[in-house]
Image 1 (cartoon, rainbow, N blue to C red):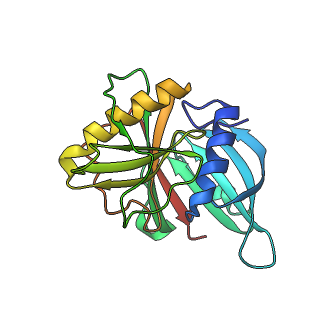
Image 2 (spheres, helix red, strand yellow):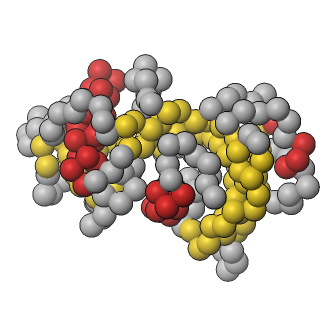
Length: 211
């Protein structure tokens, strides 16, 4: 039971497990993920994260299409994450992130694969496909996770190249069998990249609730 459109339960589990390796405030290395209950507006999951501390962290993840009331979350003790396309009043949350999803049925354009990243950029993992604007003069560079189809790392010279990044990532994900690519932000990760003008097929706000 997962209710994050348009992902299936299996797609969501694989996606969330890999996104957790980015150590965002709302997704960390996953030990266990299981459903608690479904409601008319969505569903609530419980995640157990591996922690740098000598204990397991736990978080409740509420995925809601619409927000009527959040009172039902008060009985859940511990960290609460809300994922919703709607906005929440500022006094109800401590941190905010964004999630963009783009269908691989979109038109796409093939980028340049790099076997070795230029000096000064993070080292990709074997899970990543590295794509750039060119071999020499970089205008953008990104690492697409081949399992979650999330853009785990992104560098752009300016915002005008975001459309090309999405087009390249769509081509790569389609080739690998993915139905959607995602761009997940939060806690300093990709927060400086302005994605607001590049309309996704699905968009979610992600909140760390303050109660």
